[in-house]
Image (cartoon, rainbow over the protein chains, first blue to last red):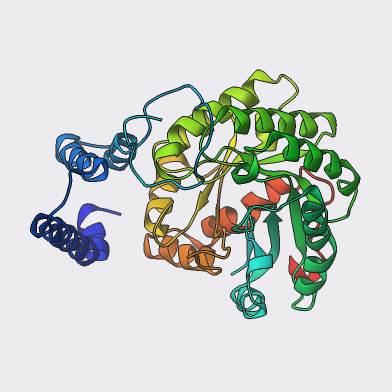
Length: 88
Length: 271
């Protein structure tokens, strides 16, 4: 599909998502509280989104990933939270 | 339209889902062993679960004319207890002869811990000794990239394992190339919030040809959509893919991988 066809197909959906994203960041901005590693990772992902000319999805997923390579000593939870806390 | 659902946890679904899948053109469903949402307290609990997957659930699916196959293992979410895992793995060989068992799965990692790695290696050894296909679960969210790399290291380190007989599931944009470049099959899981949307799955198919890719709903007790594959087929149509190309992806590709197990056969009326 060419660019126009893709825009015809996905533009309104993407537009809604970017407004949702903006509203989410505004909501967080109005709220009080401690700094959070998830928000820091999210903001880094937004920087990557602007920076990369291609493979943006891959880059954003990588920014939100645990960058280490060794297995952790023990699993203390089953859940994942969507961003790496900076330590295991 | 016809399709194979290669990854669905039907024990967590209602019979309406079976009916809807049949109406949408599903020709067979494959159910990997998974975490029930709570930890089972003993190996006996797994014995009962394996009986459910090999006796009860195929009967339930058959009421809707749907062939049901399964994979057996202790899921990575319960792999921190190596002693329990060892007991459960010892139960599996006697179930492997059952007519609907396709192989070992979904094994893999959850939080990428040392014990999970040890249990993964036990499962890989079990599959190799019994010449079984392997279905691999890759971790969620921030743990996926690291976990996928660790899993591939384990599989590639065992010379008995053939990559074309292993499917690495839940790939996303940051792991799909890694999986395909090493000769493995990749599975894209279509979830509403995490993992992969239909549009992103189509992106990956267009970038990596779809030769060794399949899509699945992985529907379970969480937020998931049993008809995710038909919805993805619609997305493929919207993106201009031909009915023949869609059939290759959602019907022929799963058959090509799963038929490496001689027990995977579809009755004439489901072809």
